[in-house]
Length: 577
Ligand code: C2E
Ligand code: MG
Ligand code: MG
Image (cartoon, rainbow, N blue to C red; front, side, top):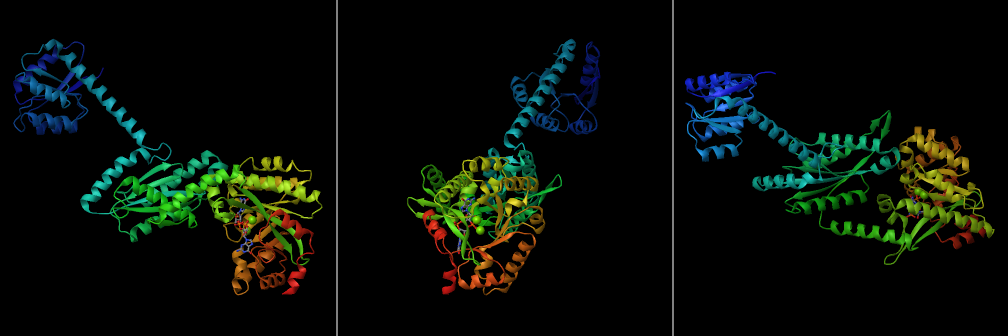
């Protein structure tokens, strides 16, 4: 066994010598002892040498009494200290034990044979205490840290915020609270699995941290939610910059196993003391502003203002109401004609969700589809619309009404789910007819990631006879490369290129290009949002004949669409203009 290294701090050499002799009597343990006659000397030795225990006389040439105890205990917090005093002052001893000293012996009164055991026990007790406090520290660290990202968690916020705010009060400075929520993370997590989701979160956390100063704080407060506290901020300039940089850095693709994954971020910001002096309130305001940022189109930041509170409350109520609407038959499917302008005949129709709201009347899908996506209610909505469309097609068929095709919108989140095709299969199997009449409209975002799965889904759908179109084409992020990789049947040109088509030459160039592209790749092309006869004429000129828009008809109930399908078509209508 290695010898136990003692340091004896003692100004009388005689006392040291007596102690050293006593140590020689010890049979069970081997000791070495170094002597320091002043506190300064002791400090030097503690720097140079591993010491297992300290024997301390408190009255030294350079320090006396209690301050000696304090100095040594704080200087070597893990080394056991045994006081070696001239008199047995019980009160002093008790106070010293309380301060972290392990034991004490009175000069000339201790039993030299038991000295070794006494020192060993002091060392063991100290080791236990050190282990215990390390374990406690670890436990505390675990409790306030998020295991995945290593960031502080929700539990840590209150304590940290109290300190940050107290400091801001004292220095009369401002604190910005940033509430960050990732856009599109749920898709990654649902579709690529939790391992990829976890890796995306870790990388995102790293990117946010990299944008902050050392003195700022970041917490992970929920699945894909983070809170940052920025100290000493000015109302606008530097917070603007930080928020913008965070968004940009999160937007950059995250490459994993050779594939790019994309997420975005919406950020809400509130300020101490401007918006509130209460931290819970500040967090709630930042959260509210974050929702406003999402509603404003995502990938942006918003400062809290008093008008917003109602918006977030409205949102919560709306979500509850929509849930209720689904089970209460307040949702109805409308159908909008898609017309072939060359023949004037109905080529297809698009199923669009409408909500007969008990208070607000009929609501178009655009009023609630984002909220449905966010809350996950979109899965139920898509399934509901698909069932309705299947039933409606059978009814039209049975009644001899010729509606060649029904388009059904599918949310990207829904489409990416591994069991998507199986679910479609189950639903269309209820019909007497093969689903060659069905066309699913995907957004460009559906093609953005996980292309192996999307490709697989598209091919399996087409095997069943179902066609696939890209909705709102030109608005999203899809590249021509992705378009080439996926066997799409139809491109639907986004309304934004049509609305100003007649006056805007750039829009004309884009529409022409999309039509040519579609033709070359053997895809059909539909112009969305056609409202005027001039638009119809121009589109005809561009050789784009499938059109959808108010010009031919707004979304309508099924019986109205039956009339159009059975009528004489739209050619006459166009001729009138
Ligand atoms: P979308 O698929 O691009 O549908 C076309 C939207 O444009 C519809 O809005 C339609 O009412 C509107 N629209 C059609 N023609 C015109 C026009 O000439 N002028 C103007 N200004 N608007 C026109 P709506 O019904 O509010 O739907 C908005 C979006 O919500 C849809 O865009 C679609 O992406 C989504 N959506 C609708 N129903 C469903 C559904 O059942 N499931 C899913 N996942 N999404 C749906
Ligand atoms: Mg659509
Ligand atoms: Mg569209």
